[in-house]
Length: 215
Image (tube, rainbow, N blue to C red; front, side, top):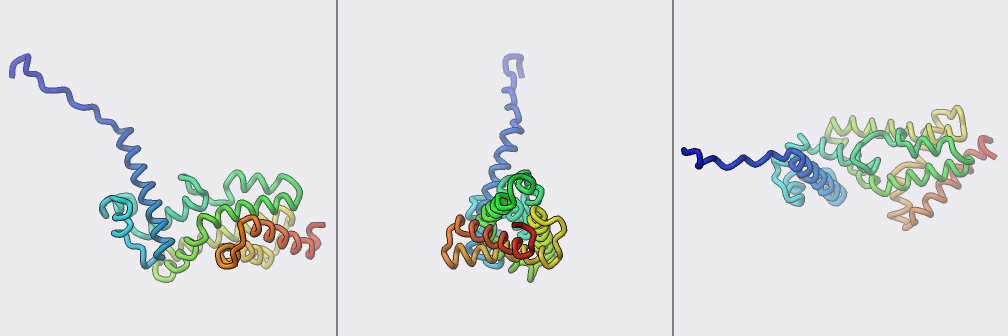
């Protein structure tokens, strides 16, 4: 090779673009998986079908999520908080904020609004989780964690107006704010989210008033 026959310069490796593409692919898999789980349930949503609908190979799905249980858990985590960094709802700044600001009525209404927002995204997937937990030990553990987090949310909700709620009060509040009740009222009975929020607020306050916690 002569001095004039220099090899063409190598193209620079663009790690940023590759990372962005990988993140976009991951988001598309998660979105497609959510639609499949909601439409077909745990047993009807297969990794091969999710890959096909996302426009990627099955190997790509598994390289991002080692199992269907891992994929479902990530879908559920992200939908609970509505963003790409999953963490417990009770740790969200807006959840913490409304426990200390305003009158009891304003606090309970704000909490009911947050709960309605979460249910709108995740209530159907909670039903899928219950189905999956019957046959998958990993997801049975996830359901126990979700139930524990829902109980903690109920406890924090009660503590906005009651400093020392009983276990029965906490578990009753957990049932009142459950995704099952949200689906019954909004999907089966046709209530709007605003009707749900108003009813939950009024009923919560009525319960607290009956116990002499609020006036």
